[in-house]
Length: 212
Image (cartoon, rainbow, N blue to C red; front, side, top):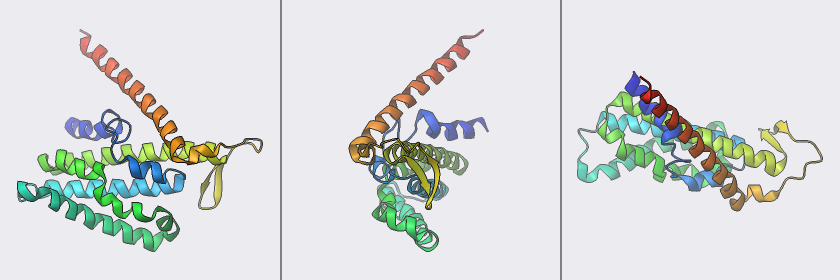
């Protein structure tokens, strides 16, 4: 159980795919202008990442090393197709907004990287933990980034035409936050905060290890 929890926890903070490994940034910065878009994009990544890890890990002994990358891509593309068709059927409005970014999950470095670096070398239970940890780590960062950009860039957070949070009417939102320069600026502060939190966490671990 400790080993499973350790694999799960890596993606949440220590090896967060966005704030630490900094992979899969293109889609993150592009769709994080609204919370509702980020929520569905995050769920799509969690599903594809976890299920791909399961299949790759389950059949890792049957996958020839020489053709493993094409096989990984086929597995990932299969689950992306499921997500693509499901979103088009059940949330067509979100699907239209996300557009090309859903199919491009196939080549998302987070998913392909975990299949290659982790799932291909570990058993199924640990691969599930890694997929969930990395996926939830990705989801939490993209949703927080979208919340900050939408709230301070528009003055409110909207969920399917309903305002969940709204700043005072006198607030003048800077449109920069909805553009790529604003995304990089906010994301930079998030990276700094993440590294500060990780350093504090490591310091606590070292302090506990030094205790008699």
